[in-house]
Each structure stands twice: as structure tokens, then as C-alpha cells.
Image 1: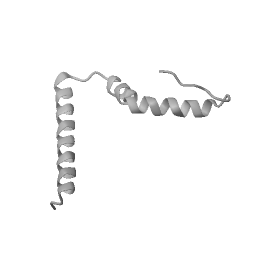
Image 2: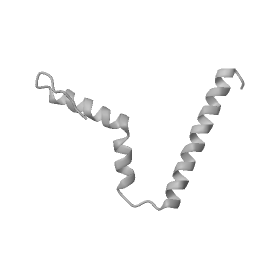
Image 3: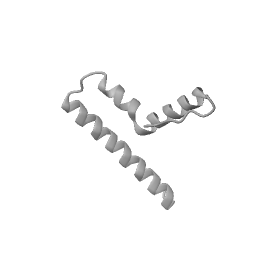
Length: 68
């Protein structure tokens, strides 16, 4: 990953770096790796995330089709 510092503006480069890290999910992964997660907990977390995504897609589909 490379961030270019222009005109010695380190603050702007730092903001760009943080935005890239956020977009790539580095902060989320760091948070998850702070403590050991049992395989069963990982499966439960991933399944809950999948359910949330599916419900969100259903809501969007219903809203798009005009069903309420």
C-alpha cells in the first residue's frame, strides 16, 4: 500500500491512509484478532452476518418492487 505525501501535507496523507485501511477492512480484522475466537463462535458470527445481509437484500428488493 502506498500513500503519496504532497507538499509536505502529512495530515492529508494520514487521512488517506486511514480511509484506505478502513475500506480494506484492516481495522475490523485487527479487532477480531485481538482475542482468540473459538471456531464455533466464528461460525455463529459469520452466520449472523449472512442473515443480516439476506434480510437487508430482501428489504431493498421489496422496496424496489414497491411492496409494503
